Image 1 (cartoon, rainbow over the protein chains, first blue to last red):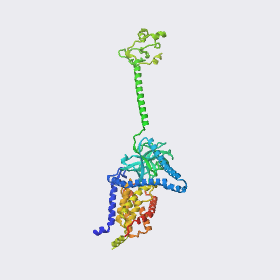
Image 2 (image 1 turned 30 degrees about the horizontal axis):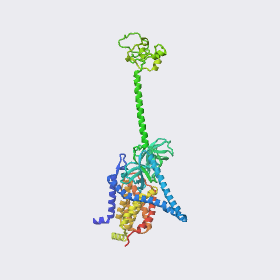
Image 3 (image 1 turned 60 degrees about the vertical axis):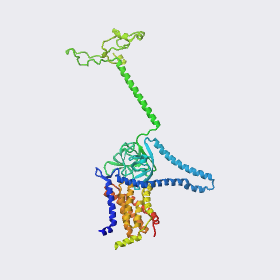
Image 4 (image 1 turned 135 degrees about the vertical axis):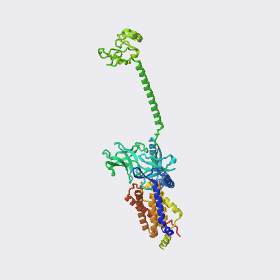
Length: 413
Length: 173
């Protein structure tokens, strides 16, 4: 037995290592309801721990490399690249050399400032709260299109936050570590984002393919979809806010798996292969500037005052309506019905003619009123006129008075 | 007798390196593998962890060390992706084992042999990786032959530079 283990020691070690890893793989994979195998969206604790360790080992050197690269670029642009020029112009005065050196330095600063200013402008214009981050590393594997940024949970980053650039969307936060985060790019095969075509308003799901191309899947064949059409986020995936640029339609091809469906190939708006600075949307609550907040408050106040004014007008018109005389008697019998107490065999009457009710304040336009001299009309109080029996066409209780408007009264035949 | 001969041959050709090289070389390979694609527009035309695994397995002529180093490098690589941890580990364990086994039987001091082995083992690693995903995990993973070929070529070209550099760090009696 001992000789067996000694003889096959190497092979046994290999088998043990493979077996351990196969068991580890089995723990991470689960079967979906549709019968397909998939990885858990959130890693088990052990797996997350391994990722955390790997990140802790790789991120600091990556950040050092990144800083060294920036330093080397600065050194090259600020010194080495200019040394040749300085040698050529050695005979020139030292002042000119110094000025050129400074100029180059300033130009680089200006370029960097311009780039950051553009980012800042975008950040200020954007109504959501964002956090700028630097891309520092990748997964090192082309089948896993993830990259790492230098901001983590200590900066307020959380899972599933959207990552964008001023050009367009980039991806979403998949894993968060204390000082770095893993971003799943939109062109990965496992990513997904709800998108909408700008002009045709057709919705679909954006995915990456094996080659890292973007495509919209799950769309019924539609002749209206043409190359060049803009693709925007639809906002239904709870990751990307609505209306962010995604890219342009490049071409349309039939879905190889499903008839009558098409795949729309999209060129990403963001430069996914050349990412340096990105923005992480840390809050989808609108972040308005002080000026915008003032405008909003003013608008709200005006809206309240307008509503109060409308309510007051309605109340006033209601009071007026109660006070004005009515044209019809609300208690008058409905045509065709016989009032109680009357003989059923009574001869049919002529159709009722609307009767004018006694107005509270009759004037010279009141039907049946005698024309009066202008002077008298002005001086006669309404009470006097009201008490005159000849001006009272028909006596009715006050409760029977309806509320016609003066114009209605004037239209009496 | 045969085992003894193999053992003797292995001990004769086994190389030793300072501890720092054992630590720094894999770590540097892993960091560069994660960082360099940023400069190459996301393309990974080489597999530095595989290169280091093959180099040490061949140099040490030890299958167990090759297996362990391959497993460690592969798991580390997997941990940096969003894929299952273990697929790369299995692939590189097999590669490390094979490299260590080959190292016992062939003269691997020859650069051409080492580069050929690196090229073939790189292709094998990619193939095993896809095989694990398709067969073992039952998941979709496309085999991209051309890119794997380019990657194997790239790894061999990098090996052309890295192997002599690492050779210079070995301890001599």
